[in-house]
Amino acid sequence: MRITIEVMIPLRNRLPQGGRITTLELHPGGTVADALRAVGVPEGEPWNASIAGQLVAATHPLKEGDFLLVFPPIAGGSG
Image (cartoon, rainbow, N blue to C red; front, side):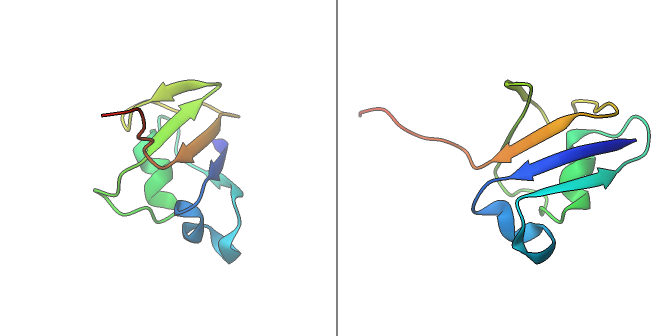
């Protein structure tokens, strides 16, 4: 199965040549965690991911043609 993954800074150094978008071949039934492993994101590194604007978990199953956006955790607001 083929998916596209885009990573935002600071995870961008995980992709070949420091790019931000790449295409991956994953086995059918692959998950977000499988895609992150494929681009070298270490287990335990914090991240958020979304598909079509919806946040997804590491266990979310991917399907052919998905576009996965991976970005660092976001904090904000006033204390």
